[in-house]
Amino acid sequence: MFHAVARCILGVVGPAPSGWRALLPATLGASFILALILNLAACVELAQGGIVVPFAQDEALIHLELWGFASTMVLAVSGRVFPKFLLLQPTRDGLIRPALVLWTLGSIGSPAVWLLLQGAPAARSLTALAQLVAAVLFVAGLRLYELPARASGTPYVTDPTRRWARLSFALLLAATAANLGIATAEMLGVATTLTELSAARHVLVQGFLLPLIVLMAARILPGYSGYMLHRSRLLGALVWSLLIGAVLRGGAELVGGYSPGWSMLVALGGTLAVVAFTAFAVALWRSTGPTSVAAPQGR
Image (cartoon, rainbow, N blue to C red; front, top):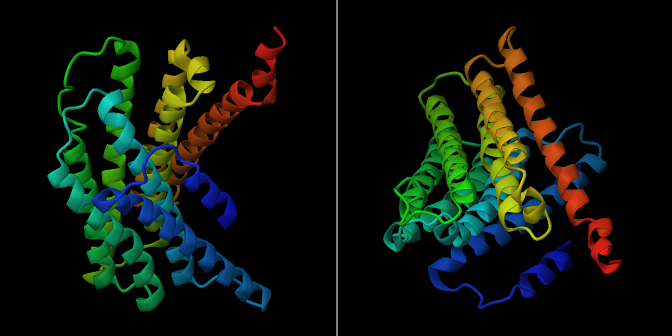
């Protein structure tokens, strides 16, 4: 695993990022390595007779995987691609720099709090606040919600992509705010549930990560982008299903948990995500698999 990731990093075309621009790659790499080590430790513990992974260790691992690795990767790619592709105004580096510092502190700090302090609410509130402020500053620095620099020559491609990106980042902000709210409530002595922690994670994954994975693949991935270029309705159905599913599932978990009535909304939101991402995966496989590559060679 380490060897495969190292080959991908070393094989990147272009100069290596330096200075403050290296913060996201460093956060991504550190989170990946720490997650692998923590997962190995959990496997050893289970092999020695443990029934389940300790809760604090499990939370730290999840945070490294979802926030430190996956979300950081999406931020890094979107920060490079979105300004030109979505015709955004020139980025405000004065906001991006502190955003990256705070994101690193939150992404690495939250797992550390779970591991070293058993998820102490006061310390967790600080790391959650760091990530929320980082997300707000990143979006403001990227100028994602401002008017574009100019009209697009292909509005049927650029405009819906910009709209979906804005909604996805709005759900990232909602997920970070939910984490902060949960930790703050615990610090003030208000009872919280595991379902609320799950709600924040599901909003992040289904509302931020999955839609942007589908969007970026449909717009920049060779093979699949050509396949989806003339299938705007299909792409819209996939992205809207993921976004709506995230709101239904995360919102229902946050408000009512798995109690009668609310559990139906949770199930519906999860089902929308599964169906949409499965359809995306099948289309991606068909358009980029060995058959699609070999076909032009036979002509």
